[in-house]
Structures are given as C-alpha cells and as structure tokens.
Image (cartoon, rainbow, N blue to C red; front, side, top):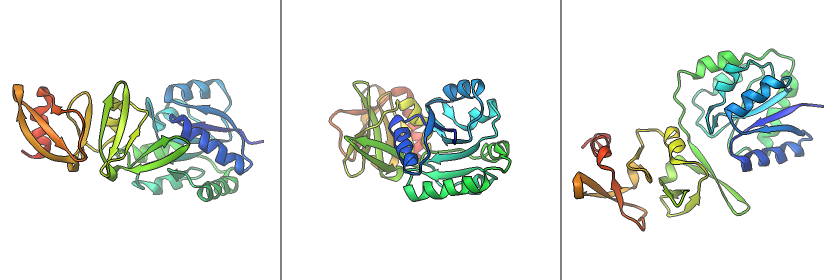
Length: 247
C-alpha cells in the first residue's frame, strides 16, 4: 500500500486533494500544513512513497523542507504559479499540478508516478534551478459556502483587513474572505503591480481611480471598486508609494 503525504497550508485545499486521490484509490496517510510541521514529521518517520507539496506554505516555501530533510520520495508539487520553470519539474520522478487541481490531470500525474517510481529523485537540482526565480502568486483560492473558486491575480483589485478578517476584492466588485494575513499576502504579490499603503490595504495599480492630498502630508486614495471607508496612505509610506507610481 502506498504511503502518501500531503503538505498544504490551506486545509480545505488539502481535504479536496485527499478526496480526489481517494477517487484514484489512493489513500492519504498524513496531512501536514507548514514547513516546520513537515520538517519535524519527516525527521521522525520513514520517507513516504509519494509527497504532494504546495510550493507556498504559511511559513515559507516547500523547497525549504527538502533542503533541511533530504528525501527520496517521489514529489508532485501543487502550485498556483505560472509555468515559470515547468521544465525543472520534469526531473526524474518530480512532477507538478497547477491549482485548482483537476481530476484528469491528477490521474495523469499518478500514472507518471507509477511508471517512474523506481527512478532516483534529484530534488536538490530542482531547488537549485528555482532558487534563481522569484515566485509570485498567480491565483488565489477562495471558499464561499461549499464552493471553491480560483481567482487570477489579474482580477484582484485589492486586499483589505477588517475586524481580524482579510478580504479579497475583485474589479467586478466581488468580495471573498481570504484566510491569510496581509503580511503573508504582501510577500506573494509582485511589487510592480501591488503596494501596501497601510496596515489595512494592499492595492493594485489598476484599482486606483484618483488620489488627493490629505492631512499630515498623507494621500487619500479613491478606489474602484469603491470602499465604505477612507483609504489613506500612511505618512511613512507616501514617499515610497509615489516612487512606485513614478510620481
């Protein structure tokens, strides 16, 4: 029987992948949700036959796991990123799946695993190749009720935090709860397209409809879609914000 581990910080996504694998008669023995948890588990247990690992985790990227704990498991990465280095994932038993994972693509990846499971894994070569590329998130998985949806980054107008809840807002005016803090989201976004103006907002350039002078040398931003609260650039960020806009 295969020993399969999922490493995924978004628990709904982990459970969804677990259900999809069950349809392929593959049972998941363990689900891990962070770099720290995965490193600890792998140090204390024999390497599984197959690992599904999301690239971006809550406390780092999954490549960090395999730098700390070398494993000979076959690895299938799940990623919401563009195919920036897809050729690198073709190394030996290493494969990838773009989120949201589709059943037929999962079936194909498992077929590749069964065919090549006896080949040696060279995860260090993959890590070396990808370390030179900065990774920015291209899609954001959201859940509303029992539904899951993948939002391309091009459709995101801004993120904001209110009452300890983070919201993703699209250009069409849809709002979704996104279960990550702005501090983590900021690191996942391309700084050419998004800027954090204060503790509450991260904006896309295209979401800025107008800017006006505000008190204490600050700026007031008019966003599209509109917000119910004033959006003010923090005074200590005004200079960097203007530079970002080329003003």
